[in-house]
Length: 273
Image (cartoon, rainbow, N blue to C red; front, side):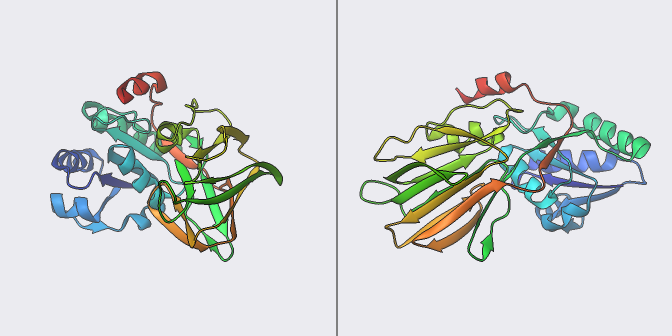
């Protein structure tokens, strides 16, 4: 079995916890750590893009660390350890981290599988490009935000026109991402397990109520009246597109997989206040 560990960059507590987890695992487990963590705890580190070759990935930090780990993990289950942030993706407390990882490793060694649940991701594509799928959200926006900026957007769902307006942009989130950027733009909270994506306008001049669409549908955003548009996946992977152009958003073929116990959604909401 191979276990990858990704600790929050610059967080000594996360790095030391990564070392404790690595030390606790049996000899038959091959442990990988990300490059930054490896430097901190004096182990050989690897690029996170290699972690798709693991059987389990452990993320230690906040939701940002989890997103980073999940991009490298691909469809490999990721277990999240929460170091005190909101932690919608991180259900394991630091004091329980070693035992939680040991349980999942024991289960894998006994059964050949890690306990996990599938969560959908969104894939954005255009002419001759495809972005890494987003676990939280995809944003399509103009070069700058604010009065006199933005671009014209036309949003269609399965080919039918939903709305058109001048706006800073359009955000499409998963239920997992509804508590993140979507919420700050006035979008609704969506409980995990609800089968829908949320389309939210960003400072639109005309009414653009948030819309929940089926995950098996297709959302297209036509952008115009700007020098170019920027498409971003989970705030890290970006693609510049010339206008006019059409950005297509659909459910990714492979979901992300979250390992370990489920977090209490409503308890985690309390940390937003």
